[in-house]
Length: 229
Image (tube, rainbow, N blue to C red; front, side, top):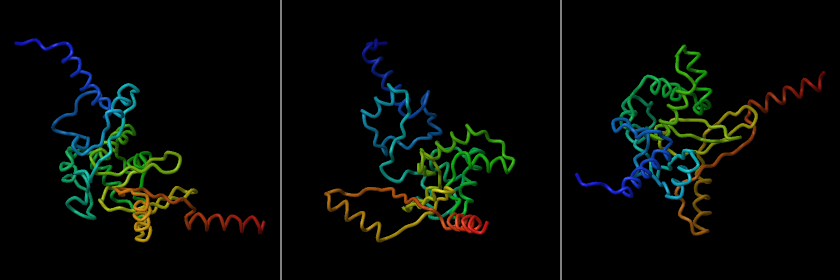
């Protein structure tokens, strides 16, 4: 058997370790169950990879287009199920299915949940899934494109089902309520702003912060009580 040079072996080892560290893994992914978006669909620069490797901080790759786990890829506005998990390259394990059920069952104002909120709902249903498992599953589902992660006020991350349609968000600064909206005038204006500056708009994220009607009413009631005291 021909001997492989130290340079070749070392380069292969460093390259493999670099990829694993960049994706936050300590070992190569199981070919039967990939929790990451395929490499062909990622923009992962060499500089970012080196920075992640030498700093020890994992980075999250950015999907160039809708990943295969997107629920709308086959069933627009449908509830996610085990078929969607398998299509995204994930096994339909009990923790994944139960966490997806909780996120999919949310109302319009409860569709965006943090890891802690998901965990509390699991506890309320007497489902024994630890908080560390909740974080791990949520990250896997985000990487596979089944969920979207949003980081709003003060770095607070919330998750929602990826239905493949664009929308923006209104966030209440008092109670943290997140409400989705879509406005054609805003969308058109953003395209114009980009074009006026020579940009071709690929994507955007708009978050508007304010006080929701319920919190305004509560604040008004408290003020009224104070005035009448």
